[in-house]
Length: 278
Ligand SMILES: [Zn+2]
Image (tube, rainbow, N blue to C red; front, top):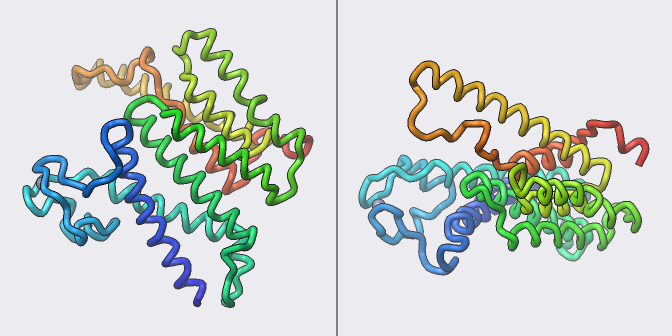
């Protein structure tokens, strides 16, 4: 099989997984994952051709075929992002490198690593969007992420060191758990500390702390911009009733943590030059 064809296949597979992640985000804690998808407005069950990732949204111009109400652009966006991310991981993994047009083995360690990364980033997408909406990180997702990250280092893909790799998670997470305890949960949630535990295991100490620094910078900068923006809008009398952007409200931290993790993972950003030492 041609590599380009395989890459197109990987993108389509990612988009299908993205469509499933949409369902997980929407239904988690609300109802069962089983059952056909329905239009949230008129309740009409969707046909198979209305459930094709990205394509159906574009073809029906983002409207329900029955009631003509607009469908959230969140659906095709998450499908597209998941598709692109799956493709990026595929190209990034040693699997694509080892693939030379010949029959490939699904029992190779490269393929196992690919599956791990796809699963890990699928969970990160779910946590990202769920925290953005609900300002909470469900334990099921964050523990699955931490567990997979720990399992991945223990299986040993690229040389595994017991001391650094096992301790990286707790070393990075404990300060944030203490911060949660001492602030009574006002500065960050315990879910954030659990996420950081997984990030430590996923990236190791040097890269993990780089991801944390990036997340803190990006979060602080975004917070400042939102506060400045809300002051500005207040003065201009344009600020509506909802005071979402005041300094008191807690900004969800997980999206920043996940963005930092992705940047460090894919681009190897090392804020401190720590990887030279550790
Ligand atoms: Zn409808």
